[in-house]
Amino acid sequence: MGVVTGIAYDSRVVKAGDVFVALRGQRADGASFARQALDRGASAIVSEQPAPAEVHVPWAIVGDARVALAVLAATFYRDPSGDMQVIGITGTNGKTTTAYLVASIFDAAGIRCGILGTVAYRIGDEQREATRTTPEAPDVQALLREMVDRGCGACAMEVSSHALSLHRVDGITFAAGVFTNLTRDHLDFHAGMDEYFRAKRRLFEMLPRDAPSLLNVDDPRGAALVEAGGRPVTYAINRPADISTGPLSFSLQGLAFDVRTPRGTVRVQSKLVGRQRLQHPGRCRDGNGARPAVRRDRTRRAWPRRSAGRFQVVSTAKDEVTVVVDYAHTTMRCAICWRRRARSRRGA
Image (cartoon, rainbow, N blue to C red; front, top):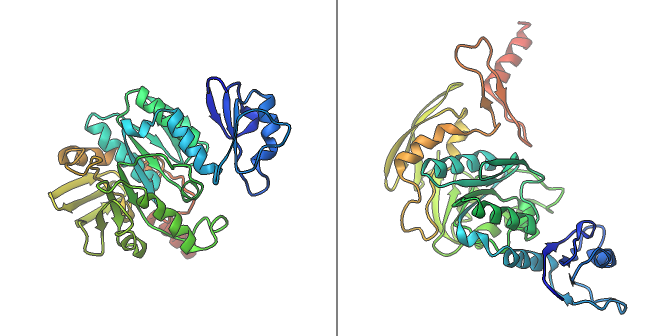
């Protein structure tokens, strides 16, 4: 077979020496494109189908090509998640803001942190346009390896339900998992809310036994994840939890509140806007759970730094208008919008 130079799942981009993994899609089986991959120089084929009689290169038959793709990718890129702390964040809403907060906390502690998510991929000091929230397994593993090679000790990764269902993050050792919430979304892909939730649950089933799982128990589905895996740490605004909030004040200039934890209370002032921001976890632990990965004072300092285009107020109190940058797949209603609507109804 010779030297393996890469792992490919798209026959159009195969290079000489690549192992081509033929994925079964909704419309076609990748095995149909094996000849194209071979013509481009593939050194071996991995498929759920047997090899045609005329093919005389190594051809491995597997039960699930997507699982095989993830395992091969992790092996080829030398298991980068073993050399860094990967924090997996899943849920319908809040993944991006939580990822940027987690990255800010690591950065404040002097631990360079990459980001993989909806808005962008951040590798070291470079930011790239994101092609999808969670890329295919070889792309994820390649990005993680690049982060490690550029000195990153951590990565905050948004983990979509599609990625979990399609095994894109299999082979990653997560240092912690975060559940934000579950609302109606992606039901064009999932058969219903129960299937959508089962996809999210996979992240926590993948956690090492001592890896913390941070669970929003204000959402009823969060409580259902306590037994899923890892070492559960719950957080909430309206229910009893391991991490909860104290007195709150908020405005368009930001938030001020207490975070009550088993290790004590932290006073936080943040430029993030909106009560729902309190549900974005602001604490990370190391992979074995023995101690906090980031000191409490650094966690507090990191909170105001990021909002990642999610209702990000870019004007100041001196400006005559309030300017907000907001990008999301679902709509966030805000006080400004409601005031404008109220004025329009009155003819103002």
